[in-house]
Length: 247
Image 1 (cartoon, rainbow, N blue to C red):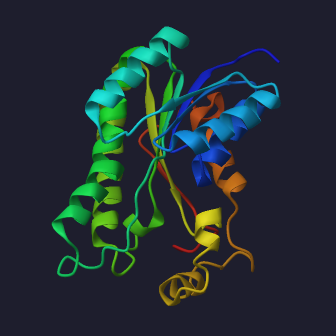
Image 2 (image 1 turned 120 degrees about the vertical axis):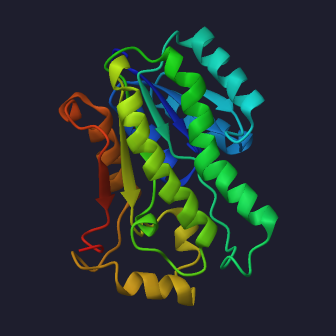
């Protein structure tokens, strides 16, 4: 299968990122696994290569600008360009309200969820030719807030605003920027907390379409669409992937 595009996915070693990078690889794209967890990244890399995919792993903390600069240089050296960037890496602690959370929790949450996409975009956009696409992964919590996640909601709300601004500022380069907001999607991590009372409250309002919750592969399909030619005239848009929970 010939390589179609070079697709970079942050937070690709688990959860939604793993589903996204796997979907790109299955389509014949060359994929870059960007994640701070080196061991899990290597596991994903081995699995993808065993399936015949063109894949590389780049262990990186997206909140560290020096590390992101090295990532950009490594991607340029290995692939020469980037056609698709998915800013998926995220951090959601149970930090509580603005009264309860620590400054450390606030700073970490903003650094990974908002500053990280800024840094990765800043240094990878010069590698992206006209016709490229950026998909930023937000959350429906930024549209209808979830209690006790104040920093996370603020960071993802900022990411949506940043994405809209980027859609305009990068239009002259021919680069589209969109947001995919997952609702409650059952990743391995979410599955561990299904009995959490707060999550149960979220689940009560998250099933208007069907009894089951969303699957990572369903969300990955939306990201793939936004990154592809079929979405060539979609720019600065926020797509909620939640089964209608926000209706």
